[in-house]
Length: 94
Image 1 (cartoon, rainbow, N blue to C red):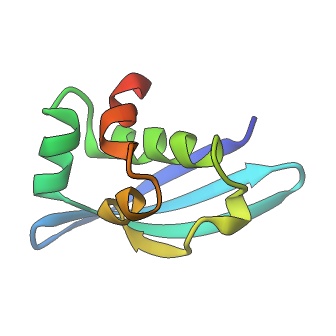
Image 2 (cartoon, rainbow, N blue to C red; image 1 turned 60 degrees about the vertical axis):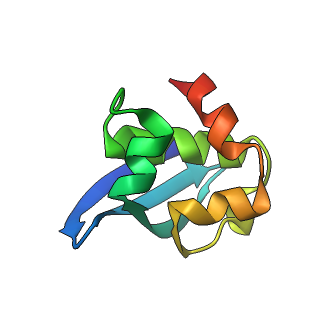
């Protein structure tokens, strides 16, 4: 199983920022992720932190694609464009 390291880079406007590193099988990838406050509230209802949402979202992604296929920089809302069931299924991760 891949190790997912999430580091908060701070809030900017109406979003939270994170740097994510995925380490698996001797290699790693790095990703910069933004999470809109409205998206965070809609997806979690405040049940988990924004940092936890990012970590769980990467678990979701890694079950569906290799780490090298994940965009290097993206807004979390983009996941739904590739995986329409993301908003419904992410709740199963927390």
